[in-house]
Every structure is written in structure tokens, then in C-alpha cells.
Amino acid sequence: MAPKMEKSSPEVLETFDMIAGWVPEATRKLAFGFPICVINGNMFMGVFENEIFLRLEVSLREELITEFGLAPFEPVLGRAMREYLVLSAELLDSAELAALVRRAFDYGLSLPAKVPKAQGAKARK
Image (cartoon, rainbow, N blue to C red; front, side, top):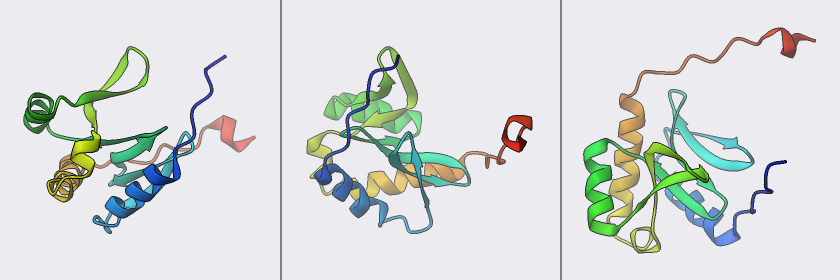
């Protein structure tokens, strides 16, 4: 049985709502009960438990890891999602946050659009 996921704090959800408002072109969805933002079917930002994460291009990820000590987003222990970084409290309170959110959006926009999967036989029953 999988461990139970921790609910996000109201403060984390409020912060996410604020920064998601900076990219009105994005679509908001839920993944595993947590809010995420997608563009052309590609997730570029989200919440998992009490972490906010962004999907960023490799050069920016490396810069942020070096400069701020950010960690990869790892929703399952030992299974990092390689393009995603968890934002630190320092970055969440920084003037650079808006630019990072826009960079994540632009990176998501640069990826090939995902085509919705056709509903399989299981869904038709």
C-alpha cells in the first residue's frame, strides 16, 4: 500500500494560486489531488504536498542548483523527475520568482504539444 500523501498547507496553495495567476495562458488541473499548470498538455509548474516545483531547461536548472542549492522534484523517494526543481523558501520570496515562472511557462510552451490519449476499452465499459 502506498504511503498517504500529506495535504498542502493553505499558505502553499495560496502562493501557488498567486504565481499561477502570472501565467493566465496556462490551464490549471489537478494531478494526484494537487494543483498543476499545463500548456499544450505539458506540465510546467505544480504543487506536491508542501512543495512548489517548476519544469525548467537544463542550463537554468544547473544554475539554480549551484546558486540556490535547489533539489530535483522527487514525488517518490529515489525517483526524481529530471526536468523539475523544488523551489526553496528563498526563491519563493525573491524578486526573481516571476521571471522563473515565466521561464518555466516558456519551456513548457517550447515542448511538443501532447495529444490527449484516446479512451480505451476500460473507459468504455
